[in-house]
Length: 498
Image (cartoon, rainbow, N blue to C red):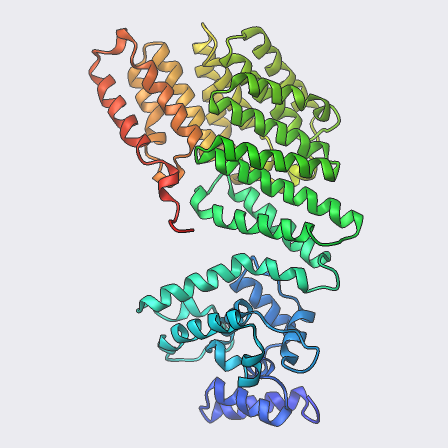
C-alpha cells in the first residue's frame, strides 16, 4: 500500500461517502493513490479485510474454495507471478462487492485471462449491467447481489445460474490453489461437501442434489490423478468412494441398476485402496440393495455374503445394514429361516455398533434404528403368515421416525415403511386401512418418487389384483391412483440437457 496506511484509506472512504461518491469512484481513487489492483481497491472501498471477504465468499458460494493466501495472490494480478483469477471467482467477488465483473479487472488483466474465461466474464458482465442498482448502498450488510436486485430480465436468471454453477464447481480450482494438488484446506472442503450431501440425500429430492454429486465426483477423480502424500491419498480414496456410493444410490433411485452397479464397483475399488472396512461393508450392502430392488435376489444374497468378512472387522452401523439387507434378499427368495437369522444378526450388530467415520457423515452414510425397523418390516411382507408382524414392525418404524432427530429422517424409507404397512393391511383384508397408510406416499411430489418407492407402491397394486378384492369399490380407485402416481417418476423432474 506504499505510504498509504489503512487509516488513510478509511479516512478517504469516509470522505468520499460523505460526498455521495459511488463505490466504483471510491475504488478507483484508492487504486490511483495506492497503486493496488482493482480487486484490492474494491475490497478496501467496502472497508473489508481479506478474512472478511473470505467469510462472505463462503456465504455467497458455500461449496467453493477461497482462503486468504489465494485472495492475496489474486489481488496482485496481473503482476508477474500473481495468481490468475478464474471467471467464476471474479463473478462471485463482483457479487460480494456489488459491482460488475469487468470493473474488477483492468484491460491488461482481462487480456491475460484464458480466452474461455474471458468470454464467460463478458457474457456475465452484460447480465450484471442490465440489473438496476439498489436505491441505497449497503456496505455494512453486503448481501448477495441476487438477493438485492430484482430479477426482471431473462439475463438475470442466466446470471443466477452462472453464479450457482460457480458455487458447485469452484472446488475444481482447489487443485491449483496450494503447493501440491491436495492440501489440508482442499481435503477439509471436500470432506465438508461430502458430509453436506450425505445429510441432504435422505431428506431432499434427488434432482436438487444430482449435479452437485456429479461435480464433486469429478473433483475427487481429478485430485486422485495427481500426486499426494500416502495419508492424503487414503483420505481422497475414502471421500471419493463415498461420493461414488451416493451416485450409485442416485442411479438406483432413478431406475438404472446397471449404472448403479458400475458406480458401486468404483466405490468398492476406492474402499479397497483406502483400506477401509467400513466403506467396504457399506458398499457391499449397497450392491445387495441394488440387486434386491432390481429383481436379482440371488445377486443380492451374494453381495451381502461377500461383505461379511469386512463387516466382522468394523463396528460402524454399516455392519448392521449388511445383515438387515441380507434378510430382505432371503425373504424374497422365500427362505424364512435364513431371513429371520439375518434379522437376528442385525440386532446383535446393533448392540455392538460404535459410530465410525462413515457414521460421522450422517444421513445416507449411517444406518439408523428406524431404518433397521423398516428393513425388518420389508423383510416380513414377503414371508407367508407374517403379515400381522410386518404391519406391527412397520408401525414401529414410523413411530421411530416420528420421534427421531431431524438428521435421521428419510422421506424414502418412511414412504417404504408406509407402503409395507399398506401391503400387510391388504393381505389381511383391510383395504381402507391400506389406503390410509398409502395416502402420504401418494402425496409425495414427483421429484421424490424414486425407484424404490415406485416399486413398493406397485406391490400394493399387485396385491389388490387378488380375486377377493377385485370387485371392492376402493380397489379400482386405489389402483388408478397408484398408476397415475407411477407415471411421473423422479427422473421426469431432472433438468434436461445436462
